[in-house]
View (cartoon, each protein chain N blue to C red):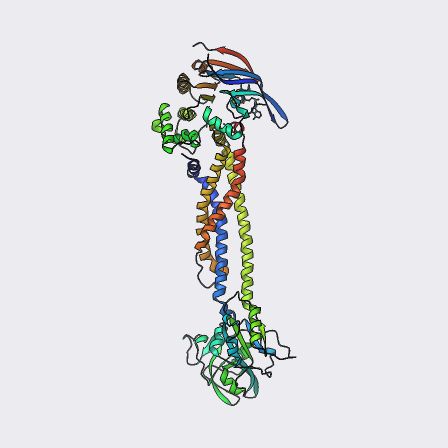
Length: 397
Length: 230
Ligand SMILES: Nc1ncnc2c1ncn2[C@@H]1O[C@H](COP(=O)(O)OP(=O)(O)OP(=O)(O)O)[C@@H](O)[C@H]1O
Ligand SMILES: [Mg+2]
C-alpha cells in the first residue's frame, strides 16, 4: 500500500464528502469554461459575419471647404466630381489591397419624377447588396404573394429596371412590376425594398452605368464604399493606405457596426469574467470550508498517522493527492458541463446565429484550473493538519 | 542483568491552556527494562496518558530526559522523531484507533507504507500478523464491519507489524467486555513472552495479572511501585 492508495481509498469510501468537493470544482470550472467558450464563439461569429457590418471606409472626392455630414450621404455635395471609375483599379493596386473585400462604387444625383425632384443612386447591385446584407426585397415583380423572394445579392437588375426604397415607393405610389418615368426615361420597378429606417428608404436604385448616362456624368462616382475582410483589421491604417492610393479623395474610416459588436463582446467578456471570478471565489471558499472541516474531522486520523510514524510530508502528500485526484475528475466534468452549457445556452445568451462548438483545447486548462482551485483550497488545511502536534491529535481518541 | 529500554529522569510536564497551568507530571523518574511488561494505573487525570505520550515520542516534556534504547529522543528533529516512532514503537489505543476508510489489512499495512519494501512484502507481512491475531479471514473488512474486540486485534496487529521492540497501549481493553478483554490481555502476554517490551495504561486491576510490574500514579507523581507475583 502506498500514500496514493490511502488518499484514493479515502475518496472512494467517503463518497458524500468527495461529491461535495467535486461539486464546488465543477460549478467553478464549468462557469469559466462556459463563458470562455461563448466568448470565443462570439469572436469567431464576428469574424464570420464581418461582411454584414457594412463598409469599413467611405472614399469621397476631396472637396475643400465643403463640410461633409458625419457619415452618410445627406450632405454630400454631389456636384464635386473628382472620383471616377478609374479610381477603382487604384484601390486594387494599393498597399492595403490585401485587406479589401468588397468595393462598391456609386453615383448619386437628383432626377425628375413627374413634377418632383428625387435622388437616384447608381450602384453595382452585387457589391452594394453583398456589402449591406441588411437590405432585402419586400416585393419583387413577377413573384406572387407567398412565393420566395430572391436574395438581393444574387439579383440581376436589368438595365431598364430600378429598385425603390419603401418610403419612396409610398410617395410615388408604386408597386413592383409598375413603371416609373425618370428624366423622361421609362423604367419598370423590379422590386420594393424593405424598410431600413435610414435615408435609404427614400432613394431609387438603378445600375451604375444607367445612372451615369441618365445624369450625363459618365464614369463619374460620388463615393466608393469599401469593406475589409477581418474584424481585427486596422481600419485607420486601411483608410490611410487608400488615401495614399487616391490622392484626390478623402477617406472616412467607419467603425460603427463592427466596433459596436466588438464592444458588445467586450462588455460580455468583462461581465462574464467578473461573474466567473465571483463563482470561482465562492467555489474556493466552499472547497476551503469542506476541506477544513474534513481536516478537523480527521484530526484523530492524523494523530494516528503521526503516531505510526508518518512524517508531516506524508500527511501533506495524502491531502494534496486527494485534492489532485478530485480536481482531475472535477476538471473534466466541469469542462464537459461548461461546454454543454455553452453549446445549448450560448446561442440565446450571445445571440449567435451559428453553432457553438466544444473547445477541446480548453480541457487541459480546465484540469489545471481545477487543480489550482483544489490546491488553493487545500493548502492551508493540509499545512494545518500536518502541523498538528500528534499528542494533541491523539487526545481526540 | 537486563538492559534498560526506557529511562525517564526527573520528567516534568506542564500544560498551559488559556492562562491556566496544569502540572500533569511532577519529577517522574523511571526505568523500564527490555522484555519487561508494565501496567500503569491511577485515577483519572493522574497523568497516565501524558506519561505514555512522552514515552511515545509524541509529546516533549517541559523538563527532564527521556532515553529509549539509549537515544535521547527529544533531541531528534521532528521528522527523525516520526521515523523513530515508526521503527521503535507500536501504539495501541482504546476505541477508534483504526482509519475508517481503510480495510483491516490496509490498516495493518499503514506502518509499512512509508518504508522501503515491495508492495507484495507489505501485504504478506500484514496478512501474517493478522493471522497471528486470528483475523486472517476478516482482513478485507472495514473497521465498522468488525466487532470491538476484532478492531482491537487489528490495532495490535498494526502495532506489531513492524516488529518494534516496544509496545505502548493506552487502555486497550477499556471498551471491551471482560471475556474479550481477557483475550486481548493474553495476546499482550504472549507478545511479551516473545520478547517485546510492553507498557500499558489500564483502569482494570484484573489486567495487571497479565503483566509483570504495576506502576501507580497519583497527581502526576509515581506513588507506589510493586512487583506482581504471578
Ligand atoms: N493537552 C493538554 N492541555 C491541557 N491540559 C492537559 C492536556 N493533556 C492533559 N492535560 C491535563 O493533564 C492532566 C493529566 O492528564 P492525563 O490525560 O495524562 O490523565 P490520565 O491519567 O490519562 O486520565 P484518564 O484516566 O482520564 O485518561 C489532567 O489534568 C489533564 O486535564
Ligand atoms: Mg488517559
